[in-house]
Image (cartoon, rainbow, N blue to C red):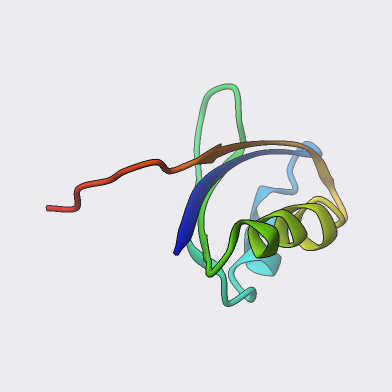
Length: 80
């Protein structure tokens, strides 16, 4: 299992529209509109690193109104 957080910048005012498109993807586990340097934070999960790459490059980054993304791959996590 490969998990990552994707930080997304959208066009001004497009946060809700982009979030609606993202949550339709089965790999998207959480999507949050945030304040700060990014507009959205999305937690994604795939079975392989290659599928993670394809998801980000071929699906997420190609959504209309997404300006940029930054991805952090989770190395280890503890969930309480």
